[in-house]
Image (cartoon, rainbow, N blue to C red; front, side):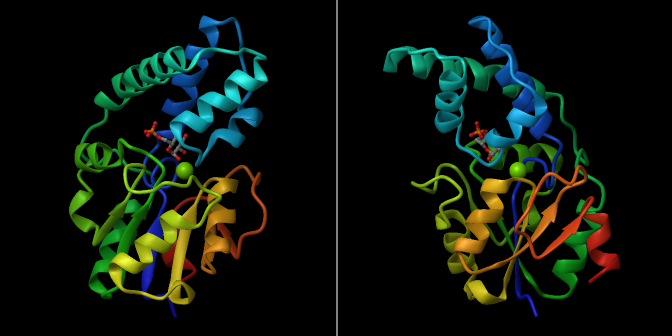
Length: 210
Ligand code: G6P
Ligand code: MG
């Protein structure tokens, strides 16, 4: 029986995965490169700098380190422009019901995200107060698929990995959860993920099948 539920952010709680894709494409366009939604799957769960490095590799483009920082900042500016339009309650289906249910049943609720914008997004959408622990891109050294983010989240709420469940929409995140010895539920409407313990289309299906 799970006593902690660790949520990924982008694409699980909020519909920001699409904003990341849009902002990265806009950046790639600057050097006449484009990439598909299928290729974009490889960027999910991956840190900002690692995502940029992957895109530059796909584009066969080498840039000096200072320019890399500028490109990452530019992408984040465009990304935050899209985030700014988010409102209270702008969460994916089932999010509020699941968070409320977990609270009333005394489960620990943690965030395990690679994003450095996590707190801002949780605040904007009005769900920050549900979380007992937030481990985000500012708190980890190693990107998913490294288990660091999930192990830190479980440790902070004082729950063993074996009784923690991770909710993820990224393959890198699923591998991270498995490496942490946790159960993982894939939030995967498109059936593109593998290696999970269970799969749902969105969070509203979790309560039904609890
Ligand atoms: C999540 C998203 C990635 C994003 C990363 C860093 O893992 O799935 O697409 O690149 O966070 O997000 P940030 O908001 O710090 O750029
Ligand atoms: Mg995600």
